[in-house]
Amino acid sequence: MRAGLVQLNVGDDPAANLPVTVDLVRRAAAAGAGFVLTPECTNALSGNRAHQKAVLRHEEDDATLSALRDEAARAGIWLLIGSIGVLTHDADGRFANRSFLIAPSGEIAARYDKIHMFDVNVSETEIYRESSAYRPGAAAVLADAGFAKIGMSVCYDLRFPHLFRRLAQAGAQILTVPAAFNHITGAAHWEVLLRARAIETGCFVLASAQTGFHAETGGKGRRTYGHSLAIAPWGEVLADAGTEPGVTLVDLDLAEVARARGRVPSLSHDREFAGP
Image (cartoon, rainbow, N blue to C red; front, side, top):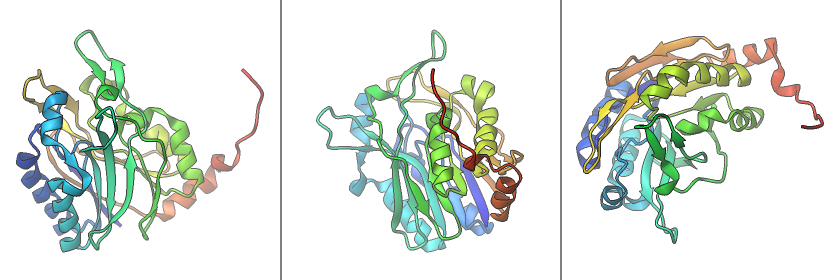
């Protein structure tokens, strides 16, 4: 299976972002990718809650989701929409950060709402409270795409290894980690965490990312790290997209999953223990 990692530099206007995304998805499919992946916040990236409320839509009305479903059907590909922000009917008005796996028919094969919220103080000027605008999901999702079983996650989930272990023990062969990773934490932790998740689980890890500076209406903007990565089950970096928007292609041999797990079968070696 050839996978295509789409790296984006979106702004906070979904209508302006969509043509660029569609073009890159088409380029990936034209290059032979049967599985194409976009990053977190594919429709828009903004920290301004009022602006988000104005531009985000409910799932059934979201133009980005609709267009990318059509594109998956047109190209006959599996498409992982890393995530889009969608409105919910929650009483507190918070949004969902939702990842979608789209089948070659254009149907939604699986949905996953990001569980872990990015509430951190990276520095005095880099402070994030994702939970003030987004409500966390409550369920892990393993999807059967036919060519592989896919464990879904989003960005900050990467720092919670028990989620990925559960997915792998349930049968995941590919872990998807779409991200809009902060440029400071990305430089320090992105590659090592992705490689660790691959090594711990014996899975391929595919991580499409946002990159560069993202201007936003009524805000200071933010910077993301880029470096979309594909990691093999043994931990090797198969592809690194660098910091420019575009498409990165990688060929996956799913037999490598069984080989890696056969060499170190740690997924079956859990033991109960006491304390602390």
